[in-house]
Length: 213
Image 1 (cartoon, rainbow, N blue to C red):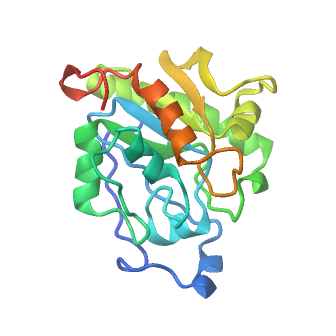
Image 2 (cartoon, helix red, strand yellow):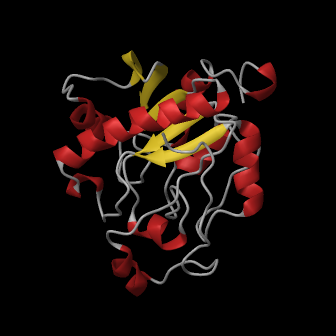
């Protein structure tokens, strides 16, 4: 089982934003998970984009609605800016809030639809093991939220799956699917994404016993 705490590498670019002509070199790159010994909510992206791999920070591309929607939903007390990398202070804030972040597939691509069905299914199995490891390390099952319904349907082999709380679980952990927060998803905006995060948050047993983050 994987350890519950994952050390993070420094940003490959030394804390600066990538230039457009640098992004291609990060295809097939990876981004570190944000995992620690206090994960109450495990957020699962589909896979890193090139900007995210370039700065080694989740959902890092400017214009992605992930961090604004998390803040608007009350899951963070400020809007994290990770476009140049995830700072130690923001990583500590996520730990204090009980939030962990991983991906179904580790390799970076320009678009999520470049992923194959087999690697998405493998990502599902890896997630099962990861949740088992977190449970073993802390004695607690996190709530799991996968951000991307199309990838979820492929990874779980359920082409009829819908957004929201799922009937199944991940290694015993409650399972949700929320929309992909990329700016390419024209069906959602920050407010609609925040509303869905509030639904997820209502099921999480947050640090300190609060009803919400």
